[in-house]
Length: 321
View 1 (cartoon, one colour):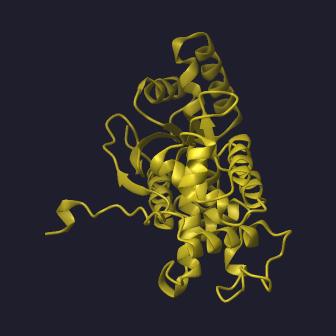
View 2 (cartoon, helix red, strand yellow):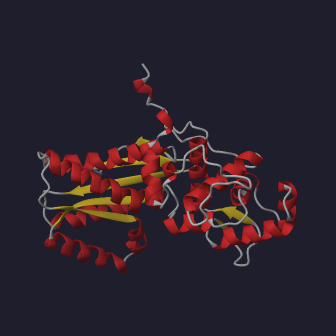
View 3 (tube, helix red, strand yellow):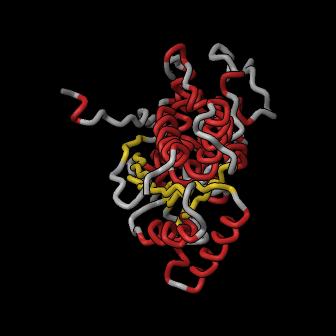
């Protein structure tokens, strides 16, 4: 069946949104082989996570069963995206089909399904509705897909809790050290970092409680950095770029700024000339963004963190010749 202009626009929009978001420097992007899907891509950091998707526009509710079966049958994917026309009968059919999978081996795969409903009156030949639909998908895909797949489920509350530490720089120092060298014991790590043992123990346990580190033991012990902890390290690396004036052209990065805004951070509101350290520090203790920048500045001054470079995908070989 020939696809409609709306179908093509929505499928292409999903890829453009994820590719554009990768310009934040927080992950890489490569378009994947579509195979049975309407769109496919690979998001990359020190891992590779495949996202596939289908678009429902022209055909009726009978096609939902086939679409979902195609999405859920694919084993090695991190997220399955379904962009669908918002109609009552389609939503009802979607609910029926997903309910039927609850009693099958497919049940566990439903958690990776992400559904985005587009208004039924959307027309691809109307520039106004194209822009509003793209903007809607951009926000929803970033919040509900990229935050979970590429940023470890990081939330505004996570950012606030992380920034609330009263030991500037130490949370970043610990995360960076554990990512690079592991965590053998409180005593061993405190010695390696040349920090107070009690402060190290307290901060490590706080990072464990708020979900930035994990351990096989509920009591803690041999720790490793979680996906959200790794995402926070990457975000702080880009904030360090901002403080150094090299985040991008004119020290701007629109995609990184958009992602930060969804996490409750407004870093451009704090000038790079602001005093973040020392007795005369200009830091609003009620502002998580200011506190986070203070952590970055202190860790940078201490030289205690391995700052990750931006994740940029190399151009395809075919574009080099």
